[in-house]
Structure formats: structure tokens, C-alpha cells
Amino acid sequence: MLGSAPWTDALVELDRVRGCEPVTFEANDPKAQLRLVTERLGQLGYPFEPDDGHGSVTNSGLALRVTVCRLAQGSQFTAPEAWRAYDLVRQLLDALGDSEGAVAASTGQAALVELASEQEGLTLDEIRGPELVNLPAKPRSKRKEPDQPVVPASEVWDLPFDSLKRLIGRRRPAFEPWVAVPVGQPDQLSRTDQPAVRDQIRALALEIAKFEGPIHVHRLATLIAHSFGVPRLFPKRSVDITDQILLTQGLEVDVDDFIWPFAVDRVGWRQFRPNDSTVDRPAWAISPVEIANAAEFWLERSVGGSDLEGTILRTFGQHRASRDNRRHIRLSIQDLALAHA
Image (cartoon, rainbow, N blue to C red; front, side):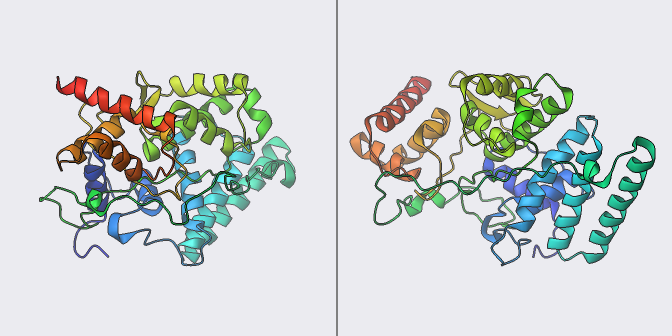
């Protein structure tokens, strides 16, 4: 797939085109390995995902990213959480075709059951814990959709980098939405005073922000709630989750309430992530910094005036030139003008 190049080079290039700070990846680091199987690798797409349409590698891999993040933070796992971690490993290895590894994960699961039964007196049902809530697919909006999807102009995909090894191509990365993976029960979100719940929320916040950031704090809180089986956020619950987001190490918030992972230099970030209208990302959820970066891209290509607003809306798949959408775009462009004043 990558010829003679180390597979970690693909992540290095991916981070570079995303505008992330350069880091060195170790081949035996599970965090790097999970990134490789859960993120789009440029023109290679998702090379580890089976063609069955179930997203089994991505779903189990994203859930494992949260689990590994919790482990890195020193979080204590309950027996059901440990049992689920083993099960996620088994699912991922099975989806990747590693039957030997999947059997080893099942063996570890069986050993956990025996240990928890002997030391804590737990039954198998207690060790497994309650079944996690998996939210159904989001219903389609009732608003009128265009006959054809709104797609960005072809020019936005060209990248200026000449020094890339081109392991993953030279196409600008599109915006990729996080896929909600179940990690807990709805009632847990009312117990954010408990360390295990706090750790789970913060691990989710960090992984989602790394995946989607910059991301609006309300969108981030909503995605976290989805992982606990909660489809809608009420004010009290939203505040509780937001408080945990703002306390998460490795994240920072800007004046527009967008969350940035430390890996991205928000002062020097010059990237933007186009998407078409099939992607669920409303205009308010797009950072003014990202919109300003897109505006600068088009201004360099002599697109201006009212054409600029329309072109930016199209760049982010927005087919409704509503007053709020245009106002958000206009204010972001003004921020760009002030930055260059």
C-alpha cells in the first residue's frame, strides 16, 4: 500500500496537510495504529475497512481510541468497562481478519470473567454490564433539499505542498464527521461528579476534538451525549458536559467557543476542510478561522464581493443562503480583513 515507506509516514503526511504540529509516531503505539485504521488516508480512503458497508473497523476502532485515551490518563476501569475493552479489541481484530488475535482477546475476556467472579463475586451478567444504547441514524431534515448535492468547486482540493512523499496523494482533506460510538448509559450523564464518568467524557472530548477540531463546543457536547445514548441536550446536561470539556487537558477554547486540540496551532492554522451538502455540518458549526482561511484561498484566486460569500457557502456544502448563514460568513471575512489590517 505504501511501498517501502514506514506506515507511520502516512500519519505524518496526514497531519501535515491538516495543519497539525509535526510529531514522531512509534510503530508499536496503539494510538497511532488506531488512527491508521479509523481516519481517511487521503486518496487511499479507508484501506482497512471491509467492503460490507458496516463500518466495523471504524466503529470498533473509534471506541477503542476513547478506551486507550482513558488508559493513558490513568483512569480506573470497572469490570464491565474492562470486559467491553476486550470485546472491542476482539471485534476490531476480527474485522481486520486477524483471527488469532481475536481468539487471544476472547481468552483475555474469559480470564477477566474468572478473576472478577472469584475476587468480586460478580456474575457473568454483572461483568458484561447493561447493553449500551446505540442511537439510530439521524432522520433526514424536513427542510427542502436541492435536487443535486451542493459540492465545492474542484479547485479547493489542490494542495500547494511540493515536498510531500505523496503516500496519501495531494488532495486537500475534506471535513470528516465523527461517528458516534456507544460508551455509556444515559443516566451516567447526570453523575458527572463521579470520576469514571468524568474520565469517559473527557476522553471522548479529546478524541472527538482531535478528529473534528476546531469544533464548536455545543457540537462537541452533543456528540458526547450521543455516545451515552442521549439524542438531545437540555440546558443543565449541556452545562455539565461543557464544564468537563473545558477541564480536559490537551484542549483549548477560543473566543468564538470553538475547541482546538493542542496538536493544531490555532494562531498559525491556514487550512480549511471542504464538504458537500450530504455532510451534517451547519454553518454555525464551522469555525470563523476556517471560513476566513477559505476566504483567503478564494481571494487569492480573484473571487470577491457577493461572489465570495456564495463561493464560500458552496465550499462548505451550504445550499441555503439564509440571513444567519450569510451573516456568519460575512463576520468571518471581516475578521480576516482585520487580521490583515
